[in-house]
Image (cartoon, rainbow, N blue to C red; front, top):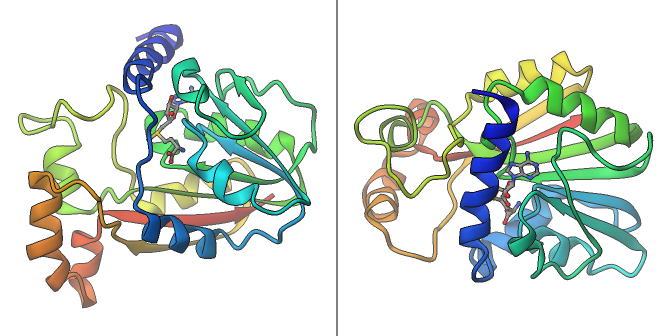
Length: 227
Ligand SMILES: C[S@@+](CC[C@H](N)C(=O)[O-])C[C@H]1O[C@@H](n2cnc3c(N)ncnc32)[C@H](O)[C@@H]1O
């Protein structure tokens, strides 16, 4: 598959989703996320693959923060509360050392096989010592393996290219792009919409997501690395 095709079909999918504002997280999860990002409150932030700008809205709350939202989907960006750029993340239209923080919220798992390439581009636009954070579906999670990976049970609901990622592979990808001090932890969002997927997770699996089972039952992992 050519890179152009890959780009186009994700764009088409997200432009369709952008017929209405896309807000993936509940208010509680958004609050938790802000705590996890640990933004210092001043400087320049890139909301990468930012969609409707949910993260931008949370981060740009501080008057000393300049936040830009970048996405391939024009329809989603129409909802962004901050200055926005429609572009492919593989060719960021910014100079070197432009940002202190990049937030790649639920984004890296949409570009399987090109993670290091993308992270190298992120490294270029981040200042030395700058931070990249993100969260992605955990590749060890049983639900993700069944319903998100290639196979007969993959749900059509997911975008064409998204695939879960193993946290240890994300560590390798960040190291491959010369990022340092990778850290990550597992967690599960509480999806406001009770789909079958969410029902199984919330009312059955979450109770067992402790000890060694956590790795196989928690749906997401949050990660951070330094330029
Ligand atoms: C799951 S959504 C996350 C949106 C947003 N970060 C959030 O958390 O609400 C993934 C986003 O990645 C964007 N995307 C996919 N491929 C992209 C690319 N090559 N360049 C820029 N954005 C891309 C999609 O358009 C979509 O908005």
